[in-house]
Amino acid sequence: MSDTARLDGLISWHSDWAGLRVAVLGLSVTGFSAADTLTELGAEVLVLSEDAAEEYARLVPVIGARLVLGPLDAPPEALRAFEPDVIIASPGFAPSHPVIAWARAADIALWGDVELAWRLRDKVLRPDGTPAEWVLITGTNGKTTTTQITATLLQAGGLRAAPCGNIGVPVLDAIRDPSGFDVLVVELSSHQLWYLGLSAPAGQPVPYAATCLNLADDHLVWHGGAAAYRAAKALVYRHTKVACVYNRDDAATREMVEEADVVEGARAIGFGLGTPGPSDLGTVDGILADRAFHDDRRHSALELTTLEELHAVGLSAPHIVQNILAASALARSLGVEPAAIHDALQRFALDAHRIQIVAEHRGIRWVDDSKATNPHAVASSLRAYPGAVWIVGGDLKGVEIDDLVAHAGSTAGGAIVIGVDREPVLAAFRRHAPHVPVSEVVPGDTGEVMDRVVEIAAGMIDGEGTVLLAPAAASFDQFRSYADRGERFARAVREWIGRGSTDDADGSPDAR
Image 1 (tube, helix red, strand yellow):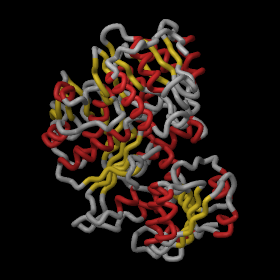
Image 2 (cartoon, rainbow, N blue to C red):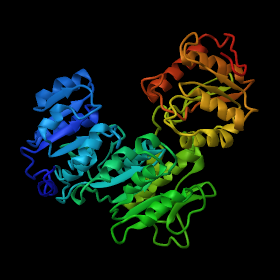
Image 3 (cartoon, rainbow, N blue to C red):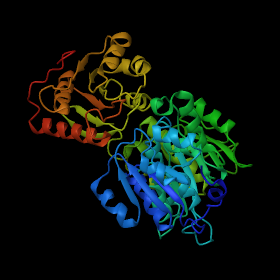
Image 4 (tube, helix red, strand yellow):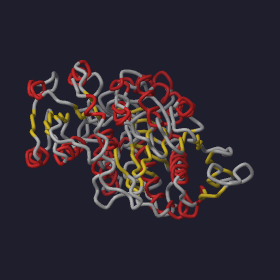
């Protein structure tokens, strides 16, 4: 059982962490950052992981922690004997995991890395002697893009801002950066938010501003259902001080704000592609407009940029425009001027594997949206490229795909189904879009999966068209990651072009 009184008092880098017994579950970038931080503070740290990269395994004893590698399908004896005061769990450990269930039953405090970082946020202070403000960003889709845009806009406004969290840079690394920041823009997954839901008041972030961009079914197996997933996402707004930014076209996000326990005076700020109301950001006659942070917002709006300018820099897809509006709302809440937002957007470039045009050759545009790993993200991509030949499939993670096929997928010019969960996708096309030509690439097909995909896709297009890799599924059934999947797609496209595009391509339905 944890010493609650002691843990409640650990609210600063300068608190007495010495001798605290902490078990860290998982040894990837997040787990190592937690172990490294805690050993620096003088805690006694035991790291447990089923496996680990050689570099991390070598460094754990160097930083002064102890490492136990092996199965975690039950609490290891080393963990029981350690009698931890608190367990820091990497986000991959689901609520149903045997070690997590054991810890909760034993009343051992469970923290995520975000709670630990919040408690330690005063390590490096701003010139006024206060810690950096936090801006929290979550949503089923668009989190990383919005986090990157927000940080870019804040930097353009003269603030020292760092994107961190689920984006790839642990929050613990950001709060320990000796250069310090004015604002941390923290991307949060639903997994990280679930752990924040367990936190004591001392470990609950008080963000300056926060947003849930959208909500659609995802990670349902991890959370145990849609209601639990929604509840985790809603925690992003808890204790927000200034701006709760929500999606006017997604009722769930508005309801989250209405239900949230926020600091008195926090405002609800809407964003959407339509005409903005007096507390919103939106579009009017091709202009992105701010009517939320404007003295005369009931009668006029401030121009941020135009859809024409965004199109010129590859940022005009509707879901990207929504991300830009959300990021702009967050930046405006911190005082960034419209002119700075306009100029920064002219220089911003999307990450690889997010609606990235790989090539345009002989009238065919090849688009890599491998990061679209769930139906909600893919629906946006298909709307951006109507009539595209759609490459879909992988590990569906328990998510139903029928609605996606019935609505967005029914307008595709063709479909190529890949991955372990092919049959549900094929069945959805048979039920809801029988008119769409469908091909299937099964494991064991001759050659690399993406080579075969590209050959079939090229054969499906007569004249000009778009081929869109937007799998609506996780990648680990056939690839190392969504990035690996996208890179293999791009390589296959380049090789197809390099061959002169003369090879026969079999685009017939149900090709094997």
